[in-house]
Length: 428
Image 1 (cartoon, one colour):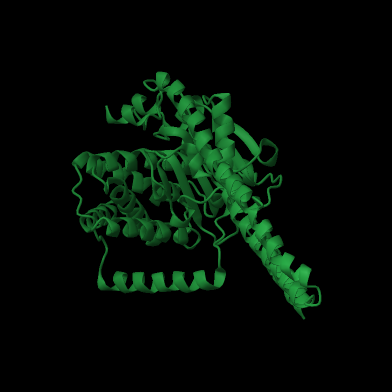
Image 2: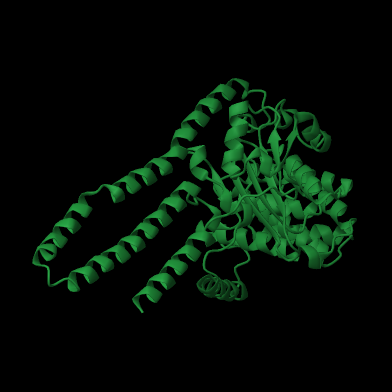
């Protein structure tokens, strides 16, 4: 009976350990784009951040010329710059999964902003990580995402929609700067996303109705547009209205962006669209997530769950449409945690065996007297301490790497004045 219990416990422990590991394998549907101006060391850091090896994914470069293809005439020369450092990791997902985004060191756009823009360019279901080894604006990131998605699926996105999405990136980013403050990016994202949702959902094409929709949505967010801003958004929405978007296919992505924006703004003490219905909806949504968490256990975050935020240092700017994807433990930390569990289980069984042998050997007094001594001596063996030190070392490895990254970052600061992706340029 005792043996059966031990075997059952070992099987459960082993299953728990195996389920925690994300097995890496070559998959042509996962594509990484790397900024063409990254150093060799920075490229290696970004692959390690994504949690992949070079032979596990398709790797393609994105350069400033490709960035200009869609942003020329929309972005300023200062925003375009001369170099591209931002990277993207894209994984197409099954229908109904929606768009999940995580960003690291991308200052120009939030994860929700990127998710909304992805729906504009025709992407309906995908996991995306957009990142850089040091803070950059990330204007080249959207080009990388579109290029990676096309390569991963083998199907080109509509060129017109790609151009509209690139224009939306700049308009939303500029509006965020004009609104300013902590809530600027969320408000700008919410405004553009909500207007776009209404236009597509209602098949609105009349310019007067578009103008009314813009006015109503901006009032909800307590934002007053300048005439130029209003005209920019009106022109953008007119272009969107002329496309063949299927609302049912992208509504999950659009509604998810709306929910994320409202959640972020509520945390700041601002509550746009916060009627009684929305409040009740938020309550039930929270309860539903809590119940789902109980039955689902660890959430499957896809490639968002493979990232190692520690590699980018303590000052890295991390954001995600799913907050569970922020500050995840590294693979080394996870393995160390389960190593401790395994040692605890095996130690428990070993202790039971010792206790059993003590009770069955009462005839031999000397052996009974030696048993506690053996247990005491086993406690002095530095096995558990060694494991702890090993785990500490492994968890510290990302910090050491981030030091190298900071050095790499400082090397690139010399080019910051010409980079489209340095936030200081955008503020000038």
